[in-house]
Amino acid sequence: MKSKRPHKSNRGFVIREFRITDYDSLIDLWNSAGLPHKPKGRDTRQDISREIDHPNAVFIVAEKKGCLIGSAFGTHDGRKGWINRVAVLPAERRKGIAAVLVQEVEKRLREKGMRIIACLVEEWNKESLDFFQKIGYVCHRDIFYLTKREGDHI
Ligand SMILES: CC(C)(COP(=O)(O)OP(=O)(O)OC[C@H]1O[C@@H](n2cnc3c(N)ncnc32)[C@H](O)[C@@H]1OP(=O)(O)O)[C@@H](O)C(=O)NCCC(=O)NCCS
Image (cartoon, rainbow, N blue to C red):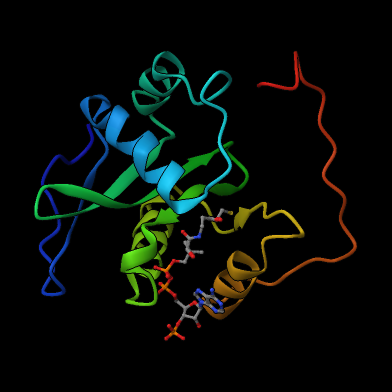
């Protein structure tokens, strides 16, 4: 059973579970943050609604004065934990919000037994590459990402 209790924070924001009623605000956040996402693919309301109920999912948001200012999604496949959809509103950046979100996802994935946490970042996304390396992730430049998909929109 997932905890629904928001985490108190003395930094002016709270970390809490994502709820499907946040969906429209989440898409607004991702658009404002410039986060690449797939609103007609794996980020439809229906798909995210299904995913958040999965026991392997850790979907959290940062909220300030009733507005979503950040998000971080985690999942695991039984071998590794994966961090996805880390985004913070431009006006709220460089305040440590993404670091707090990712640390919380990591903690919850470790509690589920994951000893490796990984994320995929596009080569052009320098700010995210810098961010993840700053918070302790090692960049593997010798790995290529290969996929097989039902369509480009997925
Ligand atoms: C990447 C992103 C989530 C970082 O959010 P943030 O809340 O500003 O990050 P934090 O304040 O927690 O940063 C922690 C540390 O990471 C590093 N960092 C963060 N953004 C950085 C940037 N643009 N350039 C260089 N280093 C950066 C810094 O060292 C920072 O610590 P400092 O501010 O004390 O120097 C945010 O820039 C964003 O939303 N980007 C667009 C969405 C996106 O591409 N997400 C990633 C998908 S993989």
